[in-house]
Length: 353
Image 1 (cartoon, helix red, strand yellow):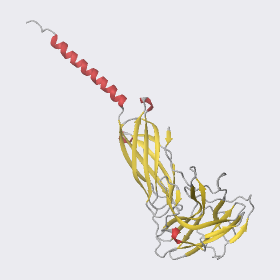
Image 2 (spheres, helix red, strand yellow):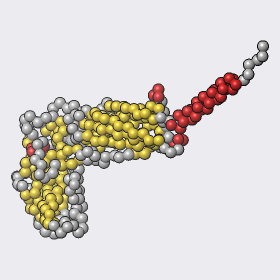
Image 3 (cartoon, one colour):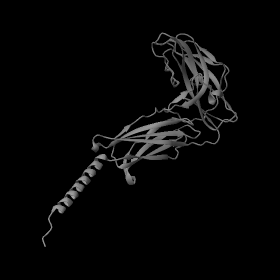
Image 4 (cartoon, helix red, strand yellow):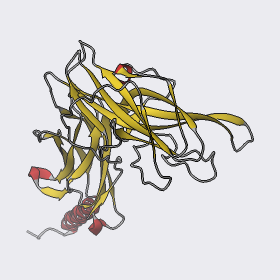
C-alpha cells in the first residue's frame, strides 16, 4: 500500500496558443454589467486576498480576467507568442462588483515558481526585470464605475535581445486600504488580483528537466511482518527555457534489482524556467533487505510534446533486525553447544592400557 506524502499544489495550465495581436485601442471601453452577472475571476496573486472579498472586510469586490476590446473572450490566461523587437497589445477586464466607483492601481510584474510549486507574482515593492518590465499601460490608475467592467488595453514590447522561450508574469489590479489589525493598530493592506500572462519569445527552445537530489529515510515497523516505511524526497528543476509539467514515480529495489515497491505516476505542478519543486512520497510495507535503492523517474512534458524521461537513484541501509537477531541467537546456540561438547570430551576418562 502506498501513502502519498507532501505534494505541491498542481496548477491548471492551458495549451500555448498562437494569438493574433489585438488592435491598439487608446481608450478603454467601460461596459456596464449586471450585479448578478457571473464573472470569470483570474487567479489571485499568491498571499493576496481572494478575488471576491470575504464578508467582514472592507467590502470591496472585484475581478480581473483576460479580455478583448469587446469584452471577455473566454480565456483562462493570456497566452501569446511574439518575436524579439515586436510589440503586441492585449486586454484585461477589471470588474467592479460593488455599488460604488473604485479606483485601482494597474501594473505588470514578473512571475516565479514558489518552493511548493505554486505560481506567484513579485511583491509590490519588488521591481520586475523580465516580462513585467515589458508591460506598458496608458495610466497607473483606473476608476471603474459601480457594477461595471472596464476593458483595459496594455502593450508588451519585447526587447531585441529578449531570450527565447517562455516568460511569465501578470497584470495586477490592486487597492491599498487602511484597516485595523487585531491589536487595534492601523495598517495599510495592499489587496491584489491578477490575470496571468504567458509569453513565448520566438527562437531556439531547449525544454529540459533535471532531478537535482534524492533523499531517503527508512523506518521499521514495530511488527517485523509489516515491513517499514520509506520516505523519498526529490527535487525537480526546470533547467530549460520553456514552462514544463510532467509526472514522477518511484521504484524501490532490493539486492540484485529485486523490485519491492513502486508508486503510481504523480502529476507535477507547472514549473517556470528556472523553477523547482520538492516532491515527497511515503511508501509503506517495504521489507528491510539490507540495502534498498530508490529510483526516481520523471517524465517531463511541454505543451507541444512529451520529452524523454530523466531518472536518478540512491540507496539506504535497511537491516532486517528481527532476522539478524534470530540468526545471532541461532549462532550463539550453536557456539554454546560446541563449547559444551568440547568440555565434556575433555572430562571423559581415557581407555586403560
